[in-house]
Structure formats: C-alpha cells, structure tokens
Length: 124
Image 1: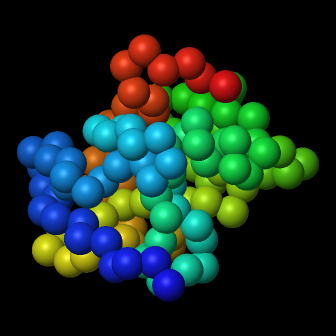
Image 2 (image 1 turned 45 degrees about the vertical axis):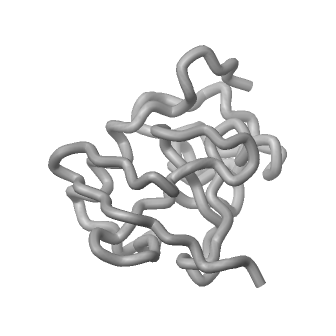
Image 3 (image 1 turned 135 degrees about the vertical axis):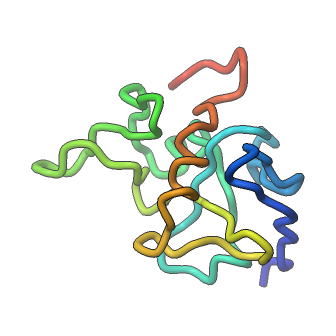
C-alpha cells in the first residue's frame, strides 16, 4: 500500500499550495492535480494534466483555464475529469482530498485558479 501522504496546509483564500501537492510522476508543483476516482483519497496518486492524460490515454489539448476538457465520451461535453481521474482538491487542516461531489465552492475556485501546466511545459 502506498505511504500516507502529508497534504500540509492549504488556504483557499490566500492561494496557498501545500508543499506535498505535486505530481507523483514528473514532480510538477503549483499546478492543478488530479487523483483517481473512487479511491481512499489520503493514499492516492496525484498527477498533473500531462501525466494524467498520458496514463489515461486522453487528449488534453482542449484543456481550458478552468481545467475542463472536451470529454472523449460522446454526449458528455466538457468535464474536469481526465479519464477516471478527478480534481485533487485538498481538505483544509486534513491529510486527504474532497470527494468529487463534496468539494466546497471555495475549494473548487482555488483549484481552478491554479495553472494547468508548469511554466514552459508542452501541452499534449
């Protein structure tokens, strides 16, 4: 089993990004991250958009500033899911992440304000 992650302190109002909020594949920090849906959120892998797209074999070229892509599933339209991965939004004061349908509005706003990719990264 994966070691429990220490999320650290998140402050939605000040835009604070916890020190351990980084891509487990490429190490990208300060960007939107996704986590696998339907998993124990405090033990999950976090991935940036590029690494999530690669893992899930999803085209992220339509990724907009809010972290939304055009879904590969017909009829879905835009979504913030990349394959089976959902936005990883930390719970303040806890070492876990909100469930997809439980994210408070200020948490969703915090996540949407983060850049999609590290500066200089190529969107694929």
